[in-house]
Amino acid sequence: MDRLDQLLTKLFGISIDAFVGINTQLSLIMKMKVLLTGLAASLLAFVPAIANQTAPKAIESFTVVGNEPFWSVAIDKSGITYSTPEPQKITFPYVAPLSAQGRPADNVRVYRLQGRSNGTLMIRKGECSDTMSDRKYGYSATLVLGNTVKEGCAIKK
Image 1 (tube, rainbow, N blue to C red):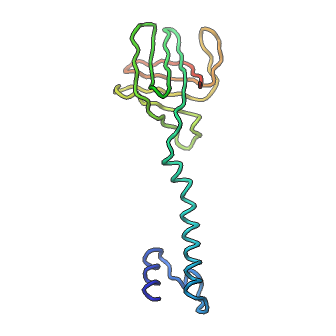
Image 2: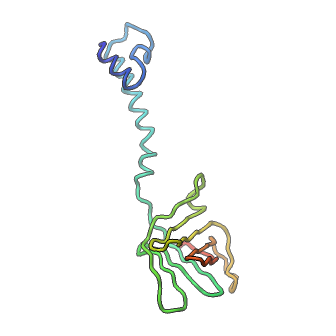
Image 3: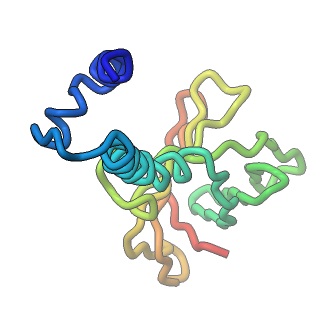
């Protein structure tokens, strides 16, 4: 009994008698049941947090457009593709976006464009209007490629 009490004190910082209350009439089995029930409940409280950290996030698809000059970005499972009217497209590998700390994930997404020292695409939730067609979009976007910053609108596919 003393070894068990010492072990529990070392692991949990509390003795069996302090945990259950000083009651010498409780059997060792009853004390262990109470202790294990509390331990199990504590572990179950961590399961959702662990599941959220390890569960892979679904890849969201977006189309981003900008004007003057025209440009677009397509985001899907095959990658992040930047296009202009010129024939050459630039495709970056898909990376999961960062979200703003303390905000819902849908508010802000920041994609780091791998292979570019200064390549970032930020998509923010909020109404956006195309400067040429006055089409309404559910997201605004800012694209940074090197020393160039471009603003546009985005729609979730």
